[in-house]
Image 1: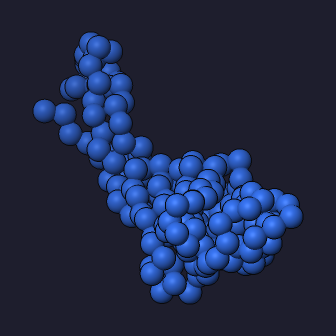
Image 2: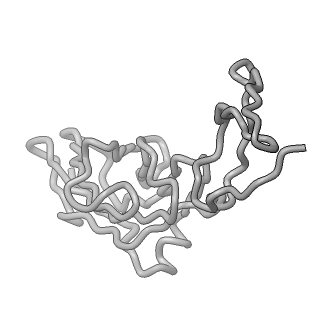
Image 3: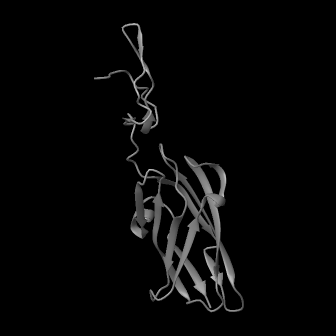
Length: 168
């Protein structure tokens, strides 16, 4: 049996084995065909978190033209980093209309994938349903596959805005 130390921060995965020295003789173990699995000592099981969330303006009048709202979110992750395609969703008062805002890597304006700020604009079309639109969720993933979805109540409890008003 082969034994040895593995650096605690080594990346998990399959690593090719190397020839070994045994009692002064070089034993050319033909391990080129075999791979030695390494289990990472540090696993990422923590989902990303929201550091900050804001949007402006909070009221738009779409009676004469389309209007934009700018959404800004700062996300943080411990190890794997934020994955592409974070989603934010709002529903209209009747629930018949919705808007989806995505935050991809290209929307990163400061920081990095471990702690970064993302900005995206959403256009409300002329004659969108008027009234108070409510946040349905902010859904996040990291590169390790951890997932977190925060609904309106959870976002309110964190002190973030969850309602915007559309006038038409």
